[in-house]
Image (cartoon, rainbow, N blue to C red; front, side):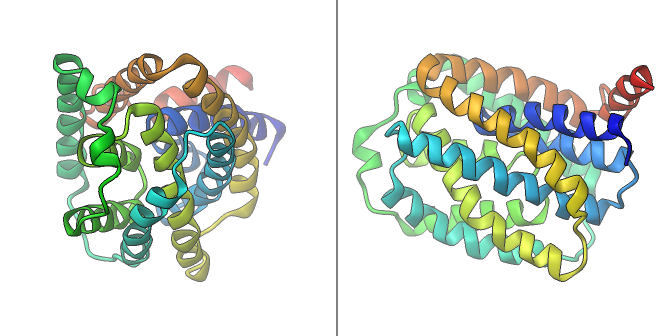
Length: 264
């Protein structure tokens, strides 16, 4: 690895950590970069989990310090996600990636529609729903989300935000805090599965993780100081960019390659 690759890993990590903390989908950047740098897809998927653990450890601690993270409720919701992530990390069945990506892009665009048409439901939360015990339906939903996160991770933050805001009644800031706690709890289990199978490059993962920590730090601070409206527009912007990639409107690998070529 040369200094240019290390610099790109750190710089992209800052962006990814920021995006993942406030919204989700930053792993599109991480995986694209790892693949461009020559890692096999399974190793890229496993290596990405190192930075995920590092960034969520940072952001969860800051959200807790700023008193927006309800650990008790978050931990109950995280439990089924942990079991789901272990199952997801072991999935070996063949899937039609193109169809899944296009369906995912459509779902993301629908999320923008609902956030703009009825913003009060997403911005301000529902205290009564927050205080309800975790239901069987929520256990199933968070197990499935955890399974998806263990399998590929990309975009899992969107599903968690939707489940936490619509299903559990959190506003966007508190939902982000709970989201990073859930991902923090299940990610080590998924990472362990990838380590067990020899699908982790520690050098790439740790260097990228340094940037992720910085991005998560700034995002956690801004989420609380700027409020839910700021978080909403960050999410909308990231969804548009992510959806364009998934629908094939541009190729992020080519974007990364262009910027690396400028530095050489």
